[in-house]
Image (tube, rainbow, N blue to C red):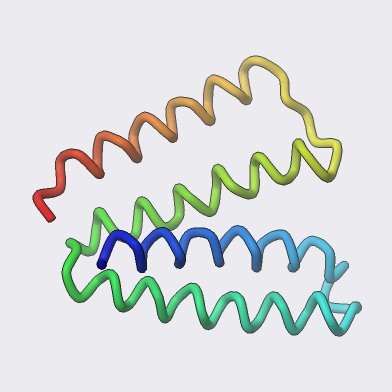
Amino acid sequence: MAWVYLGIAGILEVVWAFAMKQSEGFTKPMATVVTVVGMIASVWFLSMAMRVLPLGTAYVIWTGIGAIGAFVLGIAFLGESADPLRLIAAALIIGGLLLLKFATPH
């Protein structure tokens, strides 16, 4: 169940990061509310995962899911660059996340 909680926490991190961008510096109330609620929920699910998973593994995977998710949403919805060097960097992050997952005994 810890890995499920960690996955939910990571997805919520992507949600709040995207909502924060949409809030335009917290000037749009609905996007601001989604940001704050998403942050709280994301950290709560992370804390549930950390009951079982090692700190380093849980935290790195949580931030990694958030980073890659935000990267993908930025390209898909915000017109951010998808040049080859950025894609290689993202692939390296994903590789590191997978290695941590498989190196963790839980």
